[in-house]
Amino acid sequence: MRVLLATDGGTQATLALALAGHLAALDTLHLMLLTVVAHEQRAQGEAMLQALLAAQSDMAGATAVSPQQILVRVGQLVQEIQQALSAADYDLLLLGACLERHTPGRWREKVCARLMQTLRCPLLVAKGEIRPIQSILSFARAVLPSPPCSAA
Image (cartoon, rainbow, N blue to C red; front, side, top):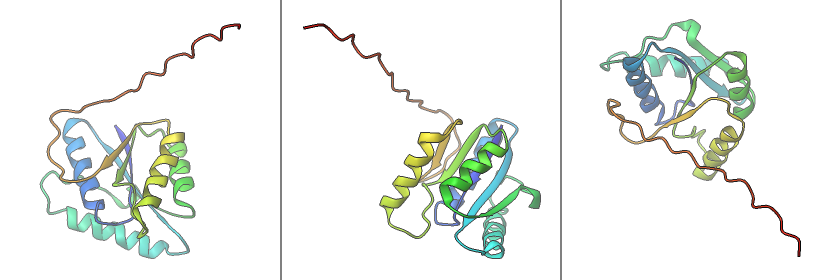
């Protein structure tokens, strides 16, 4: 399974990486870590991802990530995630509670909504407490055809 984990290093980043570790226990996992910085802050983005990985290395079931699996992009968040997804054939996009980016929650909702409109792969959001995965509830909304128009 090829997974793109997009994070801003916020509080949910650790949860998202822990969830990736649990996914790795279910299947062979090829994980790519992505962060998007607003300006030419590539060094800070790489340092944030390295710190996240260092903090995770002590946890049981941690997923090993090499420097080649770290991707720092400069630009707009949604567009950079979309470009990263289109550049490789990912099976899943994993987000840490819809990317905080140090802004109000309403903005986070807009980011998730924009991503969901264009994604070709499933989206998994890490939120709350991460436990070993034992069961998954999948929800699909049926889209029924419109009734035929009747002539009056």
